[in-house]
Image 1 (cartoon, helix red, strand yellow):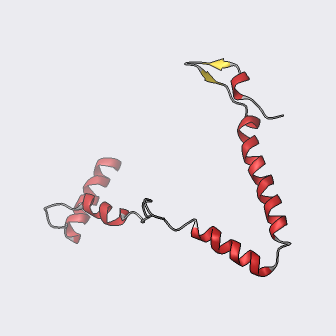
Image 2 (cartoon, rainbow, N blue to C red):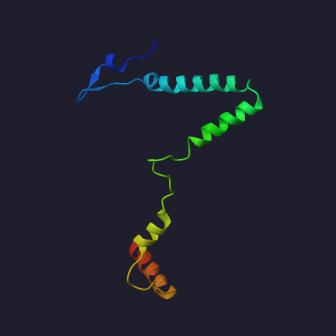
Length: 107
């Protein structure tokens, strides 16, 4: 029997308490369906499996009206956040900053 979340006891602001089995049920059904489909596909001739694979791969290509998936350029954005108008400190200045920090921390 399919669990019904509407029968679950109410908790604060009208939300329902969900048991782990209620959350896992849809996932278990998906896994079962996946294995059922896979076992049927294994019985098909190779040509039909390849054609079906091509159809599935085409679903990953954005069609008309869909936004294309582009990787975010987070590295250059991070560099931009770190960029300042001042020049980078020299090795001697970094050594002095580290020494000062260690004196403050360890006395």
